[in-house]
Length: 396
Length: 119
Image (cartoon, rainbow over all chains, first blue to last red; front, side, top):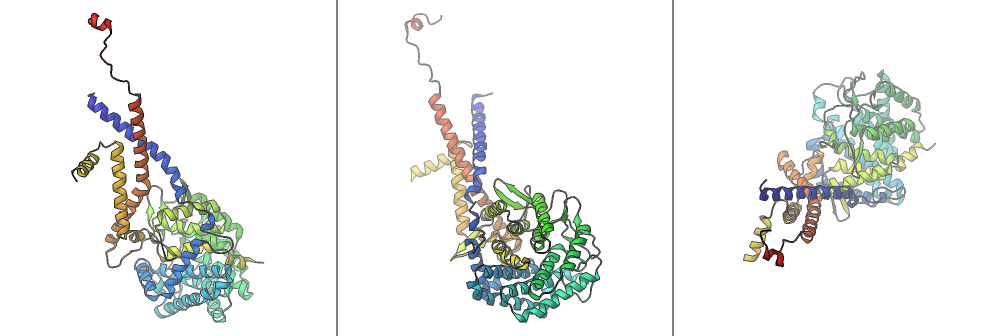
């Protein structure tokens, strides 16, 4: 080999070796720059700094109509569901914040009422399709009149949560009517399922509805425990993915699975089921954590599908980063379940990922994540304050 | 001015795996990332959630702007420190190597070599 070539090869070898050593030194340290104490994200009592900053931005969105319109327009251009879910998560967050800091109740209640009233008005004026994706119109709902469990359940839980913070008689009847409709449809179906989209039922929406029944029982001295128990029993038998033991995410009205266990669904389902059947919820969380939760180099995230299921990415998955299979949707929802089940190490590693990869932007005491959107930020806010509402609901 | 250009040319022409080259790359990525921040491309990373940052632009354009920022950010937090550490390691290695290099033999001036060079 020519001496010049040999010198170049030596230099290249040294350079590559230096890069490899540098990477081996740097990569394991990277998370230390983003890992913060748990109290920065979640506190058992009071409200964490991050939650305060996120809430400040959301409250401004509901005070400044121009800003809200712009934000919702962007989301609705992709998915009208997100507009609706952003409202739900914000209401549930503000209720939890009000329960944590009762002196702030007067500031939150008007916003909560504004959100509920405006959402109901849109639903009554434009119909259920206002908050559903366009494909909902492609075929008719099987059960008439067309109603979506997605909307009925979340609105019932919004109203119930508001009443848990402070009783408001105006919400009692509409909440009861929505829950009665769900109960009626569940009882009319052998599998106790109801459609969110035509012949498309979602575990996410059933879990929210179950939690709404529990809240109603607490508020109105009703007893839906047998109904909930039966739903869980049927779900364990018919709606579980055999390889993982996790609830499937969507299915037809006859129970035929449309999808396997999906990250953006199962974390939320586990969170809601906590007030319905604590042991089953805990079991679902542990399985989801094993099948869908990952921590790589100190950064936590959720995948959309377990290794045993090859499913397509849907709009709820958000962007999926190949190789690691990081799903934005699943990772956001994983926060909720991890906080619910006090998996603090996982919460901290998820928070490190959020600060590293979601492009936080702080201005005037307000926080938003640029890589997210209003519904994503509202879901993170909810994860950072949840607890008191479920505690109050489960109290014997 | 001439000195500055000369210095920059030397940096630019530095051998691919030299400490200088790694340093130059780290500086360039940092400069591009700062420019992207100043231009507000951070907002466009909302494409990661499937949302468009600017409805006046096509989805593809908005997503491309977001992707540019994302790649520059990944470069900034991953590659820049790795390049800097690698540059430091190589510089230290080269310095150590120079110090321990076997010095070239001085021509022998002893009586043997001069008396009997062909021995």
